[in-house]
Structure formats: structure tokens, C-alpha cells
Image (cartoon, rainbow, N blue to C red; front, side):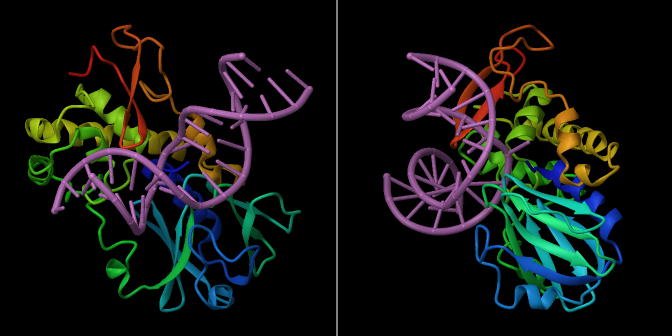
Length: 272
DNA sequence: CCTTGAACCTGCGGGC
DNA sequence: TGCCCGCAGGTTCAAG
């Protein structure tokens, strides 16, 4: 499910529901997701109050009234749902947070590519999950000068480069395709040959991400939308998922190629 | 150093 | 209807 806009949407939904909430118990239905839960995981969270929720890259960070933070990555299929009281569990419900007012937060993840772990809040930037991450795309550190210099030293094509979380975080397969369409750049183009388009690439990335956040954020109402699903499915894409369909701009059929193991969607006429 | 491919795991849709 | 294959929004690790 999640690239930056979906994670941001989930973050906002969770913050509405969970800010100030006290965790009375955590139930684990298995020993881990992509990696095992750390020792004492449930016990460390029990009795803690959630003071705020932030996002770094595609990670959610739950700040607690303790020296540790809860770090969550949704992987491909992770989702949260909240309820006002306990509910019957369903397939792939792996972690159940019961709050002190009897509300329940459930983490469900069919593919279990997600991560849930604890880290010291003091040293979070040195955490192995975060230490290699590049700048946030919506912040000023993602500048034209920075992107230009990064692209200049790369030999591979531009599209996989945009998905590299050490270059810039939060951009996944969908928004890499969409941003390149908007910028009019062919995904196969070598990174080092599009350095003069760095400004346009940045603007395109920011535009597709911001529009997606707005589309998700505008539908934050009840617990279903905490998963970000509604926002995601409401959103319309120019190229992603549209193989063979006519380009909205020129009518040419959208093509696909495989790059670094992922399907790239693009318009061969509009993107040069 | 940089880049690609496979692996992790389950569900779903298309083709036969 | 049912089975098999390919594919899916991510990350990491091994290997070229």
C-alpha cells in the first residue's frame, strides 16, 4: 500500500485517534513480521502513553512517555484499524493494542513485509533503519543542487534512482512513474543525462506527492480510512496501472518495461 | 562504489 | 469451476 502520501495519510489518521492514548496491553499473534519483534516488545509498550506520531520516509514513529519510540513500517500490505471496543480477530491480524479506554488498534499485514520495533529516541537518526536515508522530498534539503550532484554520479536509469531511498525518501513505484510522466522524462534515460532537469524532477515529485496527500487527507473520517485505503483508491494516475490505455495527454498507448525488478509505466510519446 | 536480481509472504485476477 | 502463473504500493542482501 504505502508510499509517502499513504504513510502520511495513515500518520494523520492515527494521530487523530491515538494522541494522548494510553496503551493498556499489547498482544502479539506471532513472533515478528519481516523481522522478529525485539525482546520485551509488548512489555515495553504496556502502560505507555502515545504523545505524538511522526513520519520519517515511509516509517511511522510513535513517540511515548518513555526514552523509546515505536517504529512501524507498513511494508506492502500493512494496515491499521481502530475500534471503540474489542472485535473478533481476522486473518493476518498480528498485533493488537488495547487502550486504557477499551478502544482497540489492530495491525493487519497479509504479506508481513512490515516492521515493528523499538528504538532509543535519542539516537534514532543513527538507527540502522534510518542511517542511510536521503532527504525528505517535501523539505528543502531536496534541492536542485543536491539532486543535480546525485544524478551526475549515477550510471543507471533515472526511474530506479528516484526510488532509491538513499537519494530521496518516500518515492516508490507509483509516484516515480507519475513524477517522470509529469516531468516529460523517459524512465530509461540515464540519470547523468537529466541533471539539467533536476528542478523539473523535484517539482514533479512534490506535485504528485502533495496531490496524493490532499486526496487521502481529505477523506480522513473513520477507522476504515486509517489504513489510507480510501485515499489511495480515490486517486487517479496518469500512467501507473494503465498499460495499453491511451495517454490522457496524447492518446498513445501507455507502455511498460521492467526496471530493477519493478514494472515501469510511461508514455513513449510524452516522455523523452 | 554502483546496480541488478532474488528473496521474503500472501492474495488476486487472467488465461486455459 | 478450478488450477497455475504472474503480478502487487518495499526493503535487504548477495553477487556481478
